[in-house]
Image (cartoon, rainbow, N blue to C red; front, side, top):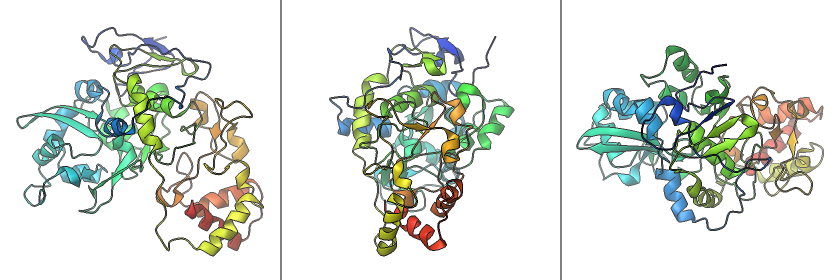
Length: 409
């Protein structure tokens, strides 16, 4: 049976692609990369020695893993940007500008409605998560990095312009709208991407063709959290590898027999960088709530409820506020059937485990909406969901105290 290959990653289930050289690039070849030798739970152990967080910062911010093969060769974004993407347009779809990469008064001297200014920003490496190669005044290639979705800025210069905040989810980013700018995509695909909206991305759509975007999660506060994915498919480096190869379009290796994916390319520009990338991610602390933004007395009462009447602490176990592993097996996450917590099972069915892990609770004040699909717009809605699902019978005052505690994490 022939399967349609989505040009965003050219990976479909259950297919196997090979490519032994970077030359002769085709859509099918985009999915190529040398298969990893994996255990029954495909993963890179997150206790990898030798990770250098300083090199990891560079990888996180500026390494495209060779994904220009997708964003330039296939999607032709190097043509779209000079023709139609001014800084004003870029900011409107949630892209961020690193002010530290620019001279003073840059914007006073450049037209924010001129795509040529965007090209100049790319030449200066100032667009967070986007790397452009500029020859003369001509943009010749474009790629993306981890920072595109998992960094923002502090808006210290203007909305969308400031110092980098690595690890913070860019909930203003509209990845689907950006992808839909490509002239290489058919209209039905553009319609799907355009439907996602800001702060959402579907990391499975290019695999199974089902439209069900997720909220972009934070990449900070991961120290001690072994399973980054909503469904516990594998530890952090597994997910970094999956995204780099199958979603970013990087030139590397990924294999997961559970998903029917084996992708092979030579050279592998991903695998050797995963320890450093992990080291940097683990160094990123979760941001604390602003002073005075939490009612300390209410939060203390909420903490007692969290570990008592509300039973939240049964699954959200301190200090990471997630369930770390299943019994004595540190490599196997303790996962939950969707019905167990009243979650929509749609996304779980598309994953390797078919279940959800308990989300690690960190800096909740910073990244609404909540749940994997963003179905809870506020922490109050989260508490209401579990109060109803588990028939807790919480009073309005108890709910408010729980919210204050959650804000404090």
